[in-house]
Each structure stands twice: as structure tokens, then as C-alpha cells.
Image 1 (tube, rainbow, N blue to C red):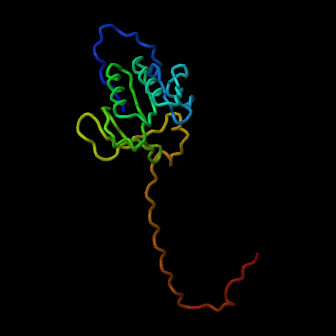
Image 2 (image 1 turned 60 degrees about the horizontal axis):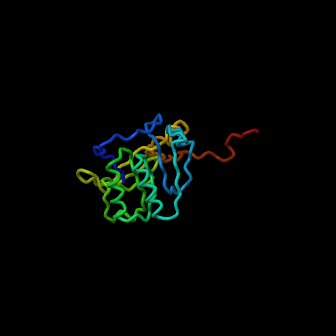
Image 3 (image 1 turned 120 degrees about the vertical axis):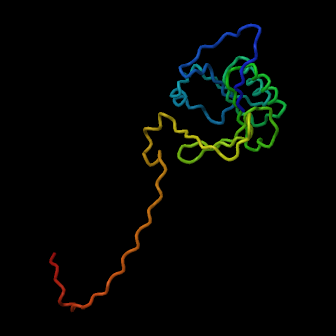
Length: 197
């Protein structure tokens, strides 16, 4: 779920955090399934000091960490496989007061549950470094089908061969061999030239 709503008017100003060169202040990862790849994040202008990694065993701890990050106006990428619709609604209400992006990653089976999130999508890896997206819910009219986005990291692009960056052209059919014409005169086997080695 991604919420990028304009924050509500507050009675007092909140202090802003210092931004990294990419514009991202701090990124909180909650229960990522794999260890974050720091060189890759640094290539995206995210310094290690701007990354917070929380590994919480219980669902209540995971939700608490996400809610505190939303209140602190920190960007969040959280894996919450067991989050219930009422818990997502509570996070959505909290996110309305933040200008930082909030993304919840849930299993594909959760797409059939109701959700208060304004944007819901299914993401899967595509072919040739692409990312395939299917929009389940968005503001505005529904979108049918899948979207394909190029997702080659800038640091990897020069390392790929041209064949991996561009789809291969369709193979051209081989022309059929011409039929052999039978000889009109058959020379005698002893009349053939002798090859010397």
C-alpha cells in the first residue's frame, strides 16, 4: 500500500529531518525477507546512516514499529504477512498525517481481503530485468491488465550485454535447399582426379 496524501494542516510545525541526496530522509525496513544490500542502496544515494532495519518476531511489535515510524515521518517498507484489515486501516489513518511514503508488502493471497489502502498492486519479476505490476485498487478508474516497467539498476546497465538489454529479434527462417540436378553423364569411377596429400 502506498499513501502519498497531502498531510493534514497541523497547529504547530514539525521539525524536518535532513534529506539525503536522493531526497529520502530515512528509510525504515520492517522484517525484510533478505538482508538489505547496502552497496545497492548506496548506489541509490541512500547512505547507511539513513537506513533503519527492524526485525520483530511478533506481529504486534511489527505494527508498533510501523506506526511509530509513520508518526516520525519516516519512509517505511514493511513486510506484514499477518496484518488484518482493521490494523491496515489504523496505519492508513496514521499515514494521512505524514508526507513520507509508506509501503506494506503482503502475500499475494491477501489481495482478496478488503483494505483501506488507496493503492494496492501485485508486483512480480518480469523478463529481461522488468517489473510486472497489476493494479488491484487505485484512485480513479480501474486499470485492467498488467503494466511492465523497466527495472535495470543504473549500476548494472553497463554490465549487461546488448542482447540482455534488448529483446532478441525473431529468427529468420532458413531458405529451403535447392534440389540437386541429376548429372547428365556419369563419369567412370577411375576417371576421377586423384588428390595427393
